[in-house]
Amino acid sequence: MRCGPELKRSIDEGESWQSVPRPGSLNQWASNVGADGSLFLAIQRDSYPYANRLVKLDGATGAMSGWDLPMEPAAVASDQQGRVWVAWCSWTDPDFQVQLSRIHMARVDGDGAVADEASRLADGSSCSLSLNADLEDSLYLTSSTYTNNGPTQHFRTHFAPQGSHLVVRSAPVLYDKDGLVVTVDGTRVDGGPTFGAAPVSWGSGFFVFRGYESVGDGVWQEVQPGRLAARVPRIPQARVTATPQGAFIDGASVLAYMKSPPGPPAGDAVPGDSQSMLNEANRLRQQLGIEPLVSDARVAQAARSHSRYWTLNDPAGVGLRLHDEAPGKPGFTGASPSDRCLHAGYPESCGEVMFPGVDPVGAVRGWIATAFHRSWLVHPGAFRVGGAKYGDGPVVMNAGGDYSFLGRPFGYPVGDYALALGFSGELPDPAESLCPGKISAPYGAAVTVNTPSSMGGSNYPAAASPFEVQSWTVIGPNGRVKGCFREGTFVPDDALEPGSDYRVTVEWADPGQPAHSWTFHTVGEPPTPKKRSARPGKIKILKKKVGKRNVILKWKKAKRATGYQVRVTRPGGKKFKKWKEQQSRALTKRLKRHQKYKVKIRATDSAKKGPVKTVKFRAR
Image (cartoon, rainbow, N blue to C red; front, side, top):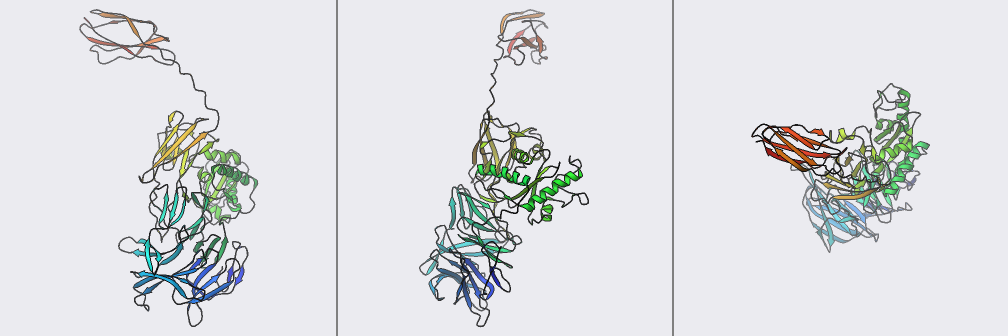
């Protein structure tokens, strides 16, 4: 629906509009979308007497019906049987409405009569009620209160009708699949602690989480069992109500119906190189079981503009900053990636990756192995992307969207991994960024984990995320893999082994959150193990003759020995001199009378050293 001098309705995401008669003043107190896709509005009549009125707009036909109400509803909802329910507050002084008396919930019959009313005593000065259905489609009432003693805190209490009374109930479960549990009080993953804000509305398989007021609401949809991912751009200055049929967008300038499932349009036609990059990325994402990326011609244009900027100014990139452009230079379209996306007509912020000297598909495959540039390519959320290569310039890929999702942490690589086993040359350099001095290029293919997000905004502050990384353990064919990490990125010091199994375990700083583990297998033939050559054998002394002025030592030839090393202490037997190489199996050494000595002897070959034989004696 579109608000203004006339009311309009769209069922094709705003492509076309149909006029609907105005039901009265649209300064509504409450609205809700029923299970059948109908929109309910609690409004005030715009002519005397100014009675409260409940209006129903049929989601399929746009037909309108309505009836007067004896109260001012604070919330309205319909159940699976199509019955309409309202919630309202009563006050100790109805004229001034300063102190709450009771909260109420009741069913409204077709003639506006109230039935099945339940209520309870209430306290406070704010009437903030909502009606919703839980996972079993049972309606319940939520009352919200705020405290202003110190930091503002938001409390929710949930009630269910029991006869004529409203009784307190636990936080209703809205979604429960494969370890992901969403309740009206937050989210849990694999039995861990609750985190994040509550969704403000939900339907069959998708949810609405309120963002900051300047941004609007974001619609999240189930993309596979146990995972919700952000699917549509947030809608500025709007409130979204999710339903099994779709979503109603309710804002100051538009009230529109979106057909289910909500998602970004495919976008205009994109150039061939952008499409080839998208196809390669989505081929990989399909193997991983995550949603495909969505092409956007505007984002592709921003990528092409930056590749062209490099080509016009310096294809080698000498003296150019990677992701910045300077006003006045040929091809300038924006200082930052977001500026260039805006110049191309895309209103959201954009990220950017670049790869010089390769073809577009090769760039996608190269980014996958890196620590930072794989970014949205393996992220469970869906993004609008576009890529390009202009002339001899670098391959550039831009992406716009929300890096948020709800579900289990998602690790990569996972399953069979058939891409590069190592990388080098990434900017910023992983060693310098993650752990200076601990590892060095070339690096092994990075291992990353994406974690679910704490949703929330100015009205619903989110709790701290329980997914702060405490430690990484990566076990490969030769034991624990040496590397370093920071947060969700682990970089091995050496290339991964082909044809090998790896197991990854990430532990969190929050002890209440279960560790996350997964495995992957590198495709290819495993390296042929080198036969370990045996070390030279032990030294066996054949003769030891100690006199007043010298000592004579002889030993048997050691197995596999091609030479020997000998070192002797200075008089006193404590401080050794340096090792000396020799081919003979005898030692003659001048001594000082009555002093203690030690001699160490070991056999050697071209690459290894044998065990050390120590001989102790005292000069006469």
